[in-house]
View 1 (cartoon, rainbow over the protein chains, first blue to last red):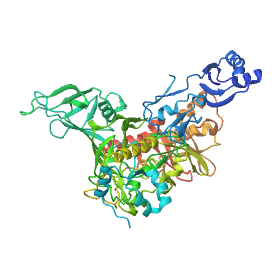
View 2: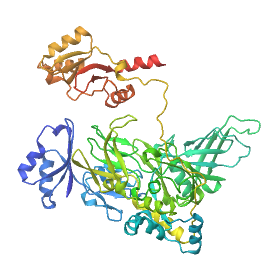
View 3: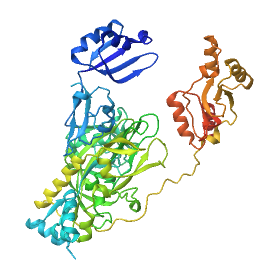
View 4: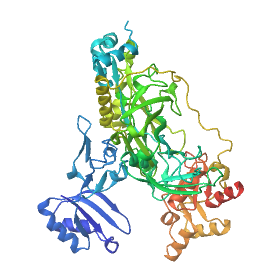
Length: 128
Length: 500
């Protein structure tokens, strides 16, 4: 499952992620990480069965953990199936089938929102 | 030798014996039967394209109000249209953006809303005359209320189009979509194998007066499009069609982030196969249509070509740039292009659409010229300060403070032993170091990620970069990273003060 870990300013200097991984032994596959001196936001994949443990460890250190359960939603009326979204998605959510129908694999979505800006027809939104 | 006339083909359309295929199907037919065999077998080849065509717009007539008005300025849903044509005629351009909603909504959206039967607000102003006394008008209209509503599109259906990528270090928002940094993606437009003009590249049958599929209705080619450049294979068409007969599936408003609005048009052109030369031309495949990938990271009219590419490569999903697989995105819809070619095929097959010969041919050589500019564009080297104080990276903060004080200069360019630019140090950085009691080397307190510019860059581009990143100066460097000078916001304001 995909989760979002937000690290607030007051905790940014602590090695929260490493400590939590070492403590729990739960592996995080980090897919997106935006961290600077004031704020941090990561998106990671974690086994569903291990989620509770790592969440507890991260939250005890001041991080905010949320489940990414609102993947991209495509408005089929607005979409013209051009495929503009395909090349900007870092997770290969979008593809064409052999008849040039646009396929959307929502399970891969990490809610980064890049495709929303790309779509010329305003057909993509996060959540329903 | 096969020789057929449009008249003969139209007779076959009338009696239902016509043989029609799409340009996609024609590739295999010519491969199998040869051009001569295919020309005997096939009477009409249909093409289709569905993509962003910014140079589109609606010519409309509102009818006269009581008391009458000679409209000087007019807005439809707060999108301004051109009304310097008689009293109640107006031309609404697809790329015109809303005064209130910006690039979210534009002329293209008004056109789509009209087509979908929605009510549109109209606001018009005038100076008043004896024959047209009214000065202000507010009303709302639907498509039905207009006397004429005709799409007059100055440049549609590009024969092919250059693909886009981005060498710069930031995402670019362009009319070719989001271009990711460091050659992160490639975007392209055009229907390749189905592209109308690519299937008749010598413009034998597509010319002034050719009847076409336009937005789901019958429309006409009324000339070559603007910027028509046949010599390089970038022909364009000017089209006319009645909006009232169109289908909203094929006329779709769009908005590109950071760029603006545009209209996606569905266009299809039937090509009568009069001889084997036309049969051979319509057998063109994606791999035969070659274009360039241009670098939009360079904000100039002359964007550098990164490489040549054909539509088969573009449509495969990725192309190689510098040995790396780079994902591609189409901005036009191939699925809809195919739908159009098939719908047109059905029209012809069922006797609802007859082919035509042009009453006049399009120019098949020549190219669009760049703009004549009478004022020289100021370049960075024309206005930069060529006096710049440099400091070596291993000198101390105290040395830096002294240099700033002695030269009364706010920015020091930090250079390596070989004279290459490695950072920049401002009076502010020095103050910060002093306040923090850190008197180490310049290297530890300087800004390492320096924005720079080249001496031959137009000042407009440098100013845009200063503004975007909120900095007041940029070193000017040559290809070897040697510092030639510095351009500051002061230099730019002096230039403007001179100009006005």
